[in-house]
Image: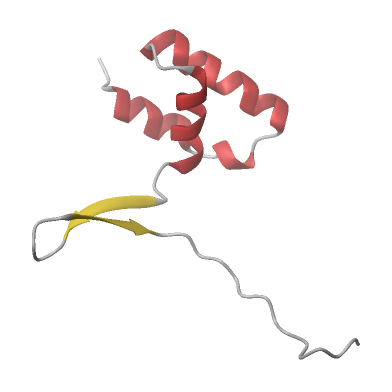
Amino acid sequence: MQTKREIIYEASKGYNKLSKKEKGRKPDNIVAGDGYNRDYASRLLSQHDKYTYVKDASGRPCKLVADVRKKKKRSMGRKI
C-alpha cells in the first residue's frame, strides 16, 4: 500500500496543466482514497515540490520557495 505522500506525488504530476474542469475531478479521486478534505487535496496537488522546509544553523525551520518568477521589464515611463 502506498503512503499518502506517494499518492499525492504521483497525482501532482501534470496537475497544474489540467483544465479547470479536470482539476475539479482530480481531488475527488484522492478524497475517496485517502480521506483528505477536498480543498486540502487540491492545495497539496497544486503546491507539490514548490517549497521545502530546512533547519538553519540555530535549529529553527526555514521555508525555501523554489518558484521561478520572471521579472517584468520596465519601460521607464515611456510608452512604445
